[in-house]
Length: 370
Image 1 (cartoon, rainbow, N blue to C red):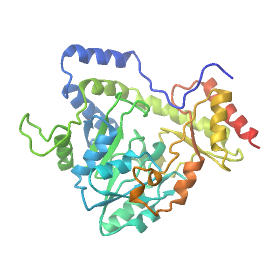
Image 2: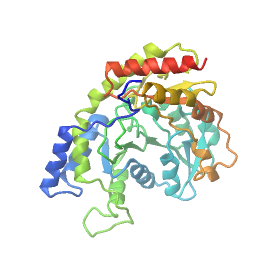
Image 3: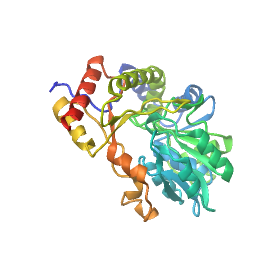
Image 4: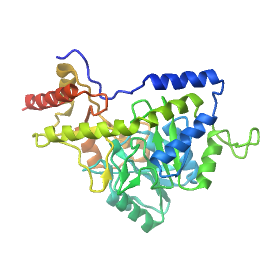
């Protein structure tokens, strides 16, 4: 086995990020100030076609504050996928509403529009689809269902910086869109989140909620939280904004190489990209059939020094924390995906030799199972 382990994900922090942190620390201005304001403006310009961006301390905070600002609360239901990170349903519960779990469509792992339609009740307030792995959800179909029933769309764009659907950027489709800036995302602010707001009413409420309910110091208008982004985090995010475009192009080039080398291998399905979708490959997620996924993952790690992740092994509706909201729910495509998916390295730190090893290792591991 080659000695240098290839991780499934790898944050990229360079001298410019370090210098930005030092500059802010030496400035004495550490709480929300000019760096945060500049980061919000620059993120909006780069990713959101000018839609208002509000920075917060995490993606999950952004999701919760977005829901609250959109008027979601007790008595409401929000339709969500079960095949995603638990923060999606958690945010609905924390807002006082009820998550309603719906299956995914199998090609892109995103919310199934037919399942959404079937799950609508008089209590349904909105739909929260996820741009999973960096691939947009099926926007046309979800929007059609939402319009038919007068429902709002709340976007989880945590993994979708720069993704788009027919030229419409992720985060500009719903009443709000949430982006995560966690270290393993396509860009990071060390930690943090962005709420992309469709109107100034939502934006102002998110600003109030993140800052103890006040815009003017000590003039608290509503009960709020302490979910502010620090100047240090914003400074790192501003540096990363200058780099993430090229990193995304590297992800897409790496994905194209993986597609070319892996397509057609028995027992393996490479990621599909829908017509009109711009995929930014937060993850390159394959399917491995016949119960072989875990064996292949372990062989990649132990025999070839290649990390791979399972996102996500337990559907949300099966989690002890959330299963009470779906006591008899059957989601067959979600269950199948949880058994079959494997995310292999696609990040921009990969060298051509690294990609060669990923491809060789995956091919060998699959062959060994025959």
